Structure formats: structure tokens, C-alpha cells
Image (tube, rainbow, N blue to C red; front, side, top):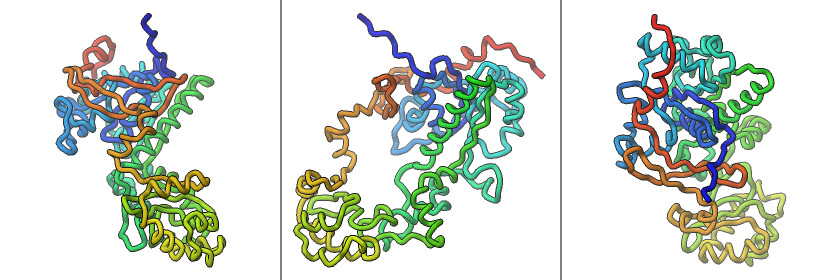
Length: 388
């Protein structure tokens, strides 16, 4: 007996995705994972710039692998928004949709004729999501809203690495992904409100606000510590406001992480009487001295030795895995986090699945990203619109 297709929470919802690169498209991707029909609006010449952003020489069909990562399972409609005929088609499409997402710089959509007030007049039920780099006001509005740049401006790069290092950014687009999550939360909240009132709404998110929100724990400490720059640890810095032994330590065969733990217990388990001179009240004030002692002990034996000793005693610790080690682990396999996507021409690639489970089931979709303009006729062909 064939199992019925899984119903998803957003089945029947129609989303217009005008965004490029990462934050906006990832938000639209998550809505697609949850069942929405996502229609990507692209330029006729070249489409989303991410189609040509080939990383590590990896492509699927004619497009970059990363484009498929952000845009799998969507439809593609081409339209030149500077041409009145195409713009009127999109305006007609807007009246039939529920959500709209863009990440143009502030003012661009207004100049095109698709700003929030205009769209609201066309479709009062529309939930309108706008992504920017730095908000809609202030001297940074015109700066490029790019993840590395915002990490640099927001101070995040000075939280990573050890005290002797320069600024260290994360090795992935952390703020784009966080901003996408914020946008999805706002959109879903407005959809719930629309269910009660019948009215849509405007959801605005930006990378800089995401940076502040992601560091709310550390930033709150900074605000209440006379706004003094937090000092990174000399050894194994992982959070400048956490006392010893919190951090990452080199072992004889790799690295391991130690989280919050009472010093006396750690000293006993590591057979380190030299730690007894430090009281728990000194775990922050003398943290570099304490961590130096711990580092000297831990580097003498393999990571698995220490994890096997400390974890059963209730000490929070873990081996630091690289990606090959992580993929080979039982924890990775238990999550089943990878799916295979296929293009319309039959080419395949592996990527991650939606991290959400609904009714006990993982959300997977084998559809790759659409060919440029593949759905233009199907989506726009039956629309009635005025030409100016």
C-alpha cells in the first residue's frame, strides 16, 4: 500500500521570492520546506547572481551548487521589472500570493513600484518581508549587506580566536542564516495574525540586528561592564565571559572541548593537585593560569581518553571533530540530515535537509533548483493584467 504524501503546514501558501544570494532565499527555502509554493522572480538575463557564484568548481547542470543549496524545490519566473508589461504581470501575480520576500537595498523596491505601501494596496492580505544589511535608516544604509562585512562591523570577529590572534570571523555565513530565521519567524507570526484579522503586514529584518541578537548574552555582559571590550582568553578561547575551564584544548591526537565544570572536580579527575591553589571564585580572575595548567595535562593523552574519563563523571566535554569525523559518527547518522536533490535534467547532488520534523517525520524534497524561467509560462500565462 502506497503511503499518502505528507501534508505540510504551509501547503496552499504562495510565496514570491525576489531575493538573491543568501538571507532572503534561505528564508523562502524554509517556507518551501514547510510546504509553501515558492516562486522565484529572476532577471531574464542571468537570473539570480548566485547561479554563477561557483564555489570550489562545483556545479549542478548550468548553475552553481550553492544556488541549488539555497533554492531547491522552488519555481522560477523571469521578469524584467523595469519593463512596464513585465511589471504589470508581477503586480497581477502579487494579488494571488500570500507572502513576498526581497533583499534589495532600502528604497529600491519603492523606485521599482513594488514597495510595501503599493503592494498592500494591491493585496491587503500580503505578508511583506524585507531583508537589509543595516536597517532602513542611518549612515550605513548604503553599505553592502554582506555577512563578513557585518561580522566585522558588529564586533563579532573580536570574540573569536585567542587573545594573541587578530579578529577571527566565523567560517560560514552565520548572520545570513540567522537573519533568514528571524524573517521566517516574523512571517509566520504575521500569517497567524492574518488568520485572525484578515490583514497582512510588513516584516523587516537586517543582518546587523541579527548580529546583536546572536551575541545577546555577551553583549549584555558588555553593556553592564562599563562597556569594556571583552578580553579573549590566552588558551582555548570559546566565550570571553565564561570562566575556566570553558574552552578547547589540544590533546595528543587532536582537540577536545570542556564546558562549564567545578574546578575542584576537574582537578580531582585530572589528578592535578596544582589546581588546588585556585578557588572556584578565581575561575575567571585567574582563568589563563588555570587553563594553562589544564592544557599542559590534557595535551599528554588522546581526546577519547579524556572524554571517557570525564563524561561518565558528569563533566560536559566532547571531542572536536572535523567534517569527515563528524559524518562518520553515529550521532550524524542518527539524524539522517542529508538528502539527494535532482535537477530537471536528472543530475544529482547531495545537500542538507530541512532541520525541522513535523508529526515525527523529517522534511525532504528531492527537487533541485529550477532552470531559469522554467515556470514563467505556467505561472504567468493564465493571469489577467493591464498594460500601460
